[in-house]
Length: 239
Image 1 (cartoon, rainbow, N blue to C red):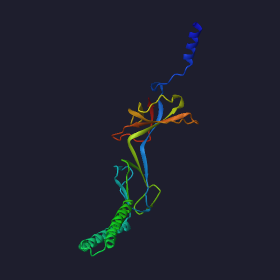
Image 2: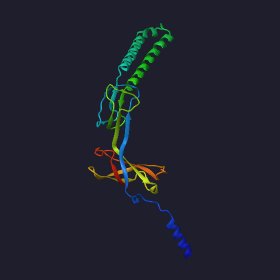
Image 3: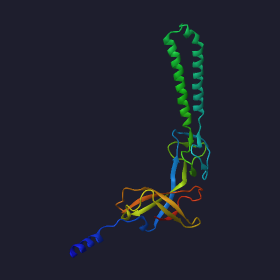
Image 4: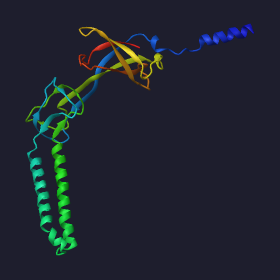
């Protein structure tokens, strides 16, 4: 019985123990934008206006640039004129239709022409809308390479970063896998002019360990409502 007791004790001592988050050492992290969006144009064309500069704060759905659109505006006016003409034609022939002096086929042709014209208006409006570029996020312009008069297409000419909240990327040794859970809180410590400690929350824990470095990634969300913290800072993260 005594030997069995020591055998069980030996097994328990050798058994692996789960690591708790508070046992992790402080880890280096990098503060990055929450989103970084590069803007190009869905349709090729010539820039008419670029309404923002580097450092400009923009709101979501704000217009940031427009392309020359004289041809598209003319096409829209023409399509609307056709709709108006078709409706007037339909109105003039309304009495004839009631008196059955116009065949059902002729009536159908007039109504179909009006419907086609209305579809042309919708198409022209969509083509015109493609020449207005709007921001898909609220953030700050970090790069601008396009100017009025320049040709744009698939290549980005504006970059906007969202920095509220910020993202904190941490590389964690694989030995600590399982110790960090989504939703866990951590302290982010920054040195330099903006020295201080800030609270962050884990939002992503990678499910794949990098074999080459034997590490996995963790992303934290760092609130930045006053936008006083810039992206690009190194930090120390304590779980």
